[in-house]
Length: 461
Image 1 (cartoon, rainbow, N blue to C red):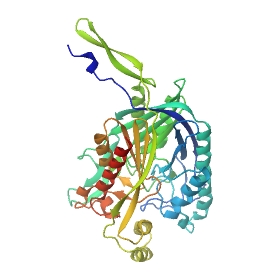
Image 2 (cartoon, rainbow, N blue to C red):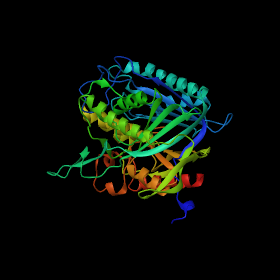
Image 3 (cartoon, one colour):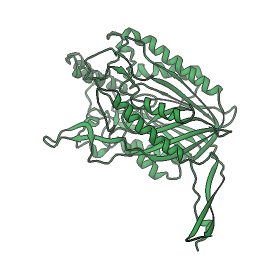
Image 4 (spheres, rainbow, N blue to C red):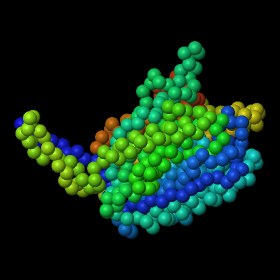
């Protein structure tokens, strides 16, 4: 008979501390510029599919300790430095947050509008400035309300699977060309991580859903403002958890897309969202009560010899730690800023102009030097680590970090505190798919950033 004391307990990674949550809608005004696809034939949306949101979760170890603020916005991407810092800067200043203690993440919904001030001359662009002010106000409102509402809670993590995500580097057999489309041949990371925030009575205050799949359910022909699949997912999860706020955490989805992608009808987004929502609810259903674990109890003779388990109290981890570090990455063979400006001026209207404008905006962000110092934000919350950067990581980053730190729940977050396009895998550069063609960095940069993140996590354990 095995020694019962050697049988490992069944437990979930948990954090215990002060937690507050709040959310607000950030729908753009009617008539505002809303073109985000080069294939679109419209500049202004015709309506609203589901509300866009700003959500904030505040974590704090104890009363009086400095909090950390996680804010997520249902927006697509920051086009320029001025675009991003013009919103994050005032929020950080007004809240008195030190660098690294605020993560402002975009959901990356391609159905949400751009907010770049440089688009003021576009059709409906005059409404972007007041919309930006509304976003700042929403961020401050939710952050302050979340901070005010903080109470002692336990954040419990569960891990499951969802089959929504597919590899999106589709190889056309006739030509060998690699395009952005569902590729059923290559396996995709299907890991789904769900957090449950429970108060002292066991009531669910909020849920966190971390998943990696580009929010591109609807494409350029869609004429409605949309949060993409996150909208239906949140609605479903909130309905089944007594109205507790559901917050989406955008995972490392550089090469991943939903099964239904680039469609004209928002029903594609709703079906994708329901699939993710039901998968998240399945993970929630499998969690233990907060602050508990299962341990082996005893053997029982029956038709077979049975092993009985029981619940016992478990002490959640109360650690809160924050690190902001940088990794120096070499830039690839890029055109100069002046060359990008010339290409932008010469490009015809349509998708070619759209591509040129984005290329110029990205080139200006990294400056004229040969390298760029990429910031990496790492938070430790009890038995979990959140790793964010202003980049689109490939799923390999989260897969590798989870393998390296199996005793913790690791969540990798894309598009945090800025936006600098993709960090493709070294092995993808010879194949030259879309993310490689528009990446700013030389081959091997993703691996360097991943290893730097691992070093930071290691220093915090």
